[in-house]
Image 1 (cartoon, one colour):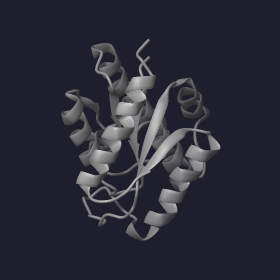
Image 2: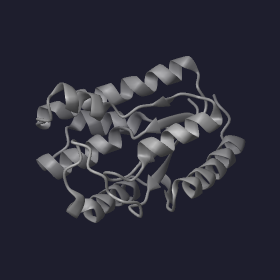
Image 3: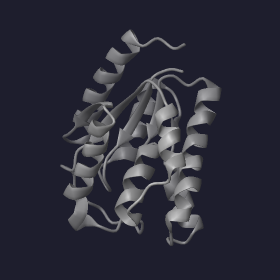
Length: 176
């Protein structure tokens, strides 16, 4: 499996914008964040029972691109978000999600910083918790010993830095 590039971060950090710009630059599609679609389908009411279906949907979005052969594989988040948000909102994370996470390989995370304005969108709900949430993502990446870079600045700066990081990874990690 080729290296997966996962755009990660707390709410309203520009993940989708960055993923779209990177996909455009590398001329590939990107795995969209499944939670948005699921959240709308459930009319915004989620419980711990929704954690596994959300993670499954995210994995399916990624598998579609893996099957298609898009490279680099760019993901607007991955199931680590299910881990972080399950622990935050419900105090636990289903073991199935942790197990699925451990099966993913060659992942590099681009953690979008909180140095951009928070924008409400109907799903985002905790602007006052932004720094805390960001630290939860950072702590989870560190605890799992994941490879990551923090991406800061305006969108142009973020794209330029991300392209450089991904280009370096592409030179060292050829697809299987």
